[in-house]
Image 1 (cartoon, rainbow, N blue to C red):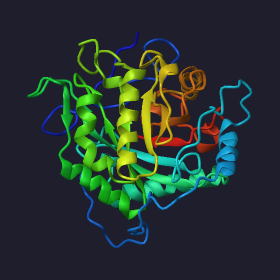
Image 2: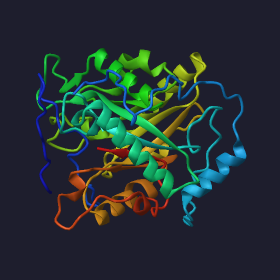
Image 3: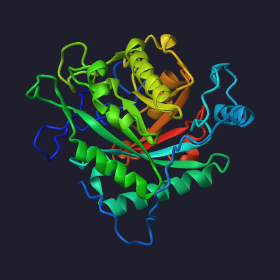
Length: 349
């Protein structure tokens, strides 16, 4: 087994280089806060709400057509996944989401913290244009995917090996997203805590129609080993708790369906996938987020997303880790779109 790679972030606590520790594989277990708007010609300001709950009906014919498009000719019977229709206002599969991932305290955790705000937003909009050109059938929706709870290499004051970001940092992510009419995902790495304790802490944000959620089993340390020592795990019961929580929020606040992104790049990161419950208020994306050369990423995607379908598929691309091996390259949109099924959620770190 290869050792897990850890990088320390430059902040008051040890913030791990989250979601870039696991190399994509089919063997087990592997696979600066600057938000002030500036007058630039590259980034357009907008106050339009990207997920305003105005839709009253769902275009089921288009839903079926786009789901079949995403299946990309898969003949296994697994894709598209047969489920009940989502509630009106659903984003998937009507748009492909292209997200930038990270944390403002760390340049090592992704594009959000690596670049100044204007440059980061310009890079994200440029990536969106590439995806629109690669697949004109799918409109592209930009997103900011902010790690709101980061796993830690040390226990911290509460002994939970996780650090909750201050709300002003999440507020900054929301302000940044508004500049390009983007969605926001708040991402949770529970460490020694659990989703039952961590998700309710973000309720005021999850009540916002444009804010969605990511959970990362890699850093759910049910074995009692510290984050980064081994790859963590979540069960279908954990995912169902989160889904139920989001569904109740959507019902109580008359919101369009929430999107729940679940990261995965090993078999044991998600257990009992067949027991994951689907409901019309929540859309679940299983996101293959392992890094490595193209063959490793393809094999991991086939093993953990194609083979164990839940609802929608996601794919993570690493600007740095995907090219670590000599002769490797980061996959292009055209190469990713050759996968069966095509991912509807794309994340860049």
